[in-house]
Image: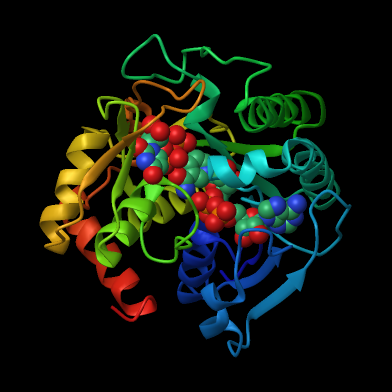
Length: 313
Ligand code: NAD
Ligand code: UDP
């Protein structure tokens, strides 16, 4: 059945892939974005599609449209960008959630929240299951994002309990792939761009901190599978690739796959930078019948190809 689907943050990295896949599945897609970190270039190939509509709007303001499903992805995701204007990041997470939940309530629509592994903060439980409450500094530099997303989760569960809104909370772990912005500041795009340009590879700290990287195609499949679950499935549910790597291992993989002769340099570790992160995806495996398929090396190759192309290298 053709559905009308609103994707907030649809011109961003994950959102643009999601819009594309939803159109391929035959749905009508409304892509809402204020272009803070998103770009028209990400969705330019969709603009002529008869069932695609682009709406420039800021999600901190109420928005009304007729839709069956809402994917709420609007929020800067890179530490550099979400710390640029922390107040705005909190408003985007909290007021954006209120606005989208209000809309879902009025329409009796399903609404999916792009939450994050950052709700676990610098985790003391490893790998992280959904039952872990996290270790977040509420006044640190990452708080605007972490606490904004935690408050959004609280809003989602309260709208569900009080108003029976059909919610889905996805706790997304580090996701990478084509259409990350070259100046996005996140580690995968930074290392690839640096390697391709022959610039120093900047490792923050000693490079022993870990992350688990999920290729964007796998993530999009998981988000859609979660949206399609019965109304009794609300989450939160971890989505990510459990393959865990140190930042040094990532830098070495990028150097090998690009054939770059860039040197690795070490820079100070930002405050509150989590030391380890790995999703426990047992719940996603069981509930969605999903698990990531793209190995890091394969995903990096595709991402490197993308950056070579856009940087003309
Ligand atoms: P992104 O920065 O590429 O995309 C975010 C999009 O939201 C951008 O297009 C931006 O312009 C838009 N946006 C920001 N503030 C807005 C506002 N006030 N009103 C309307 N639009 C606004 O980031 P992404 O990696 O695509 O992340 C998408 C979502 O997934 C975010 O909510 C992020 O927190 C979440 N997430 C991503 C990751 C990841 O590793 N990529 C991990 C965890 C969670
Ligand atoms: N990082 C790094 N060099 C960079 C950018 C990031 O070593 O140029 C590190 C960062 O300190 C963190 C990890 O890579 O430990 C992942 O950072 P990212 O900003 O991608 O995401 P997050 O910290 O939110 O997981």
